Length: 436
Ligand code: UDX
Image (cartoon, rainbow, N blue to C red; front, top):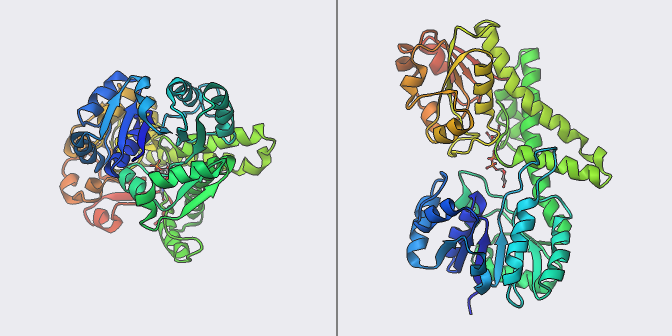
């Protein structure tokens, strides 16, 4: 008989996983404590923006295989339970807050049937899975626990779940691996590499991967700082080093740095855990990665001040982009929004536009100005800041915008606009890491 699945926690990761597993033919029940989220998902509507997931969710709900509930006892029928709850940064330090993971496992434990497998997908500090497995051995000894980290990127969530570049499973025995192989058979059949690891290694794979990505971004942003000091061009430098296949050209886009719900908090939680384990020195470099990343935000503000004046109170600044990256409405730790808020705190009149993230941005910073379209945003602006590289911004017509603004000054915080085109239309064009 086909396995039945439950997905505990229906946020970004959980909603994606539930819809994708349903599309593979499994019966899936999604559980979450938030009744509003569950009401929306049950209607086939997404509580956030993710290209392609909205239509997949709607069609999977129609098949009858996928349903959502706030009632945790509904997982009783399932054989495999994916834990997809969040692990945000703690309020009082760098470490991850594991409250949701622990309560999710505790909430399903009384309902687990004989032989069922709990599979953690949330990003957790190494050692968490072993602790949960021991906890489960007491509360539901007839169940087992495995870990299966998730590498999905926002904007590519469906693609990354159904055609991932690898599947990693942390298991304590062969049976758990066999169950996971059964779940992922259609994905494995596509030729996806399968990596079996022990529990701690599987947890480490995730944070190691995110630390590496963060390091790559901060490396190129450090090079951008040196280029600015030395009169170089970081975009040419990135292209040139990227041709070496050992380096690779991806994740070398210099600019205002990384944000979002994963990279910043994951590297901080990793440092905190390493310290607990007595391996603090091994990850000291991540402190520098974090510092370089935050410095990139400050550098943009410095360029704004250099272009206008130290005192920003009489200026209108138009900010293009609020999401932490394009094709997302996520503003968690968004460098773009952080810069906008800092400029406003410094006295500037800031108006923000974003194709999808305005609603979330407004919730976070209700006092910022927001515009429904680019024209309204840039109207009478003394300076335009391009901070999230949405396609719509890359395709803007600088000639048309020139007639709307007060001063034709643009700062490209993502190195994504065509400099020559803007300059030809009479704009003063600045970009991070490019002195020319
Ligand atoms: C990341 C990982 O990529 C993913 O594997 C993991 O599962 C979750 O965390 P995500 O947070 O969706 O995914 O965003 P990602 O595409 O990695 O971008 C992170 C940040 O880095 C964004 O703010 C982006 O603008 C920035 N970035 C990315 C750069 O500044 N330069 C680059 O070259 C690439």
